[in-house]
Image (cartoon, rainbow, N blue to C red; front, side, top):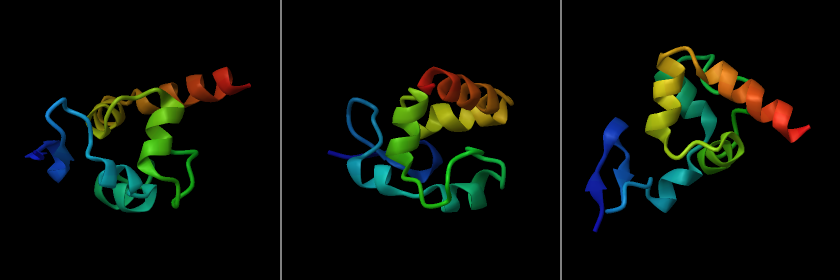
Length: 83
């Protein structure tokens, strides 16, 4: 059973973003959270791929890092680790 979650997303009972929401693209997230949200990722990048690249567990965590000004550092660390 799906339950309403943070940011109008739906979460499974274990708290993960429902599979269909992982297909959302970065562009609509930028419209909601600002043009600099997930800087370095293409507008057509899927949320689930961004989360996997950054080793983030949820959109909520990504948004929290963004709002605290930490997301740029998370992205830089992931890019450094990738080579």
